[in-house]
Picture (cartoon, rainbow, N blue to C red):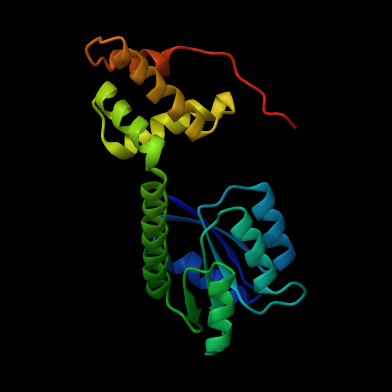
Length: 208
């Protein structure tokens, strides 16, 4: 189920979406205040947001900056058919722009389309990341654990986080370890890679 934040000063939008979106798929939190919407973003955890462009006080574009900083994908709603607004919304990170009045079905389709775009962008980002020494290390982890490419990348990332190490640093250590084995004229052995990633090691602190 997706936790969705709706920020729109028109109370009918909240009523419409609460009554029309599939409750088996979506859980909604609704606010009519841009300032409260920002506070909810900062204090909570949402999977998606639906945001009105024009609200009293802070504008939807100001709220959009918080959503983008918090990596919350969002759609922008507006009562105006205006290409300039659509461009501004896209520049702030909006993954869709809908003109009111809207139907719940239109909103559901727009959410699904936006989330598909997020997934595609994430996959492209990860594919670009898996190159050079990182790509070599990912290949070694795939062989060591018998897992697919993206799962191997996630395993490396999960190993890095608690140790405060970068993906490149760990990848360099793994490839160096494998090269040392090869230099000793020992048969290629990915067990050493598996042991490396399963062995506990003390956390390191990055210099401040």
